[in-house]
Length: 324
Figure 1 (cartoon, rainbow, N blue to C red):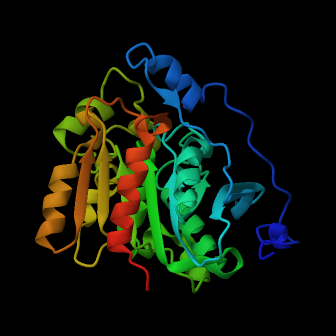
Figure 2: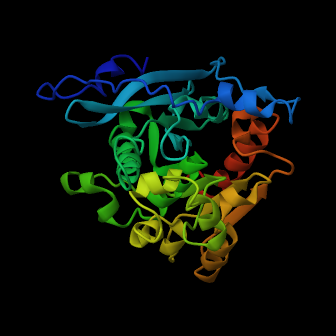
């Protein structure tokens, strides 16, 4: 079969040091189980979405996509069993830039693969390990690695999308809208492979850190530091340039990837969305929005909300990235 012998594709080069995983962080509890425990009282009908592999979907686990010294960053790749090439969605987990796991998006990856879309769930460096913009560098490296191995995994290198939820939505958006800027992809200097994507799905992620509605929460003086402040290495007044540079709304331009925004009923998590959509319309770039009513943040981890999110994602991508 076409997957035979691929285990070595993602291995480190012989001269690279052995991979050493960081110690588990007991404070890192942003996952479906802990989130369900917080939400089920107010939403007794929800169920954690299943990541079980159905017939017709394959998963390749723990593929190393970039290595910094002995630190290896990995991804899990979900593939339809039928022959490709398949368009790809790269999924970026949330967790306030300081926590979370790539398994958060495994259920969405499974459902995408069931409908013919390859999907990759990726790990990246969290703020306790490396501050902004390291996560953006990592996401761009993952896209580049996947495109460089498109033939190995039967991926369509011209139909790549980035998607993410919460902090992952902001990271995916920023990595996507800066695809033309090498400053956000230091690895590009040694590669002829592009890390640009052709579409973006922002699920309940900020588009503007500098808007008053965002600063109210992200720069809350009662939090020392806030999640964003920890990522940026300082409060807004101390690191204004970083807070602004990390806002996807700053990079709206003609020719940028189209964006689908999927939001909860909690407006604080999607600040800047309407402003960004208005700017995109002015420069002739497509955008769309789906807000799921009466939903909590992190809704994409649960049924009944995951499937409409997947359906909207696929409908948008089919429109924006049609088969050639």
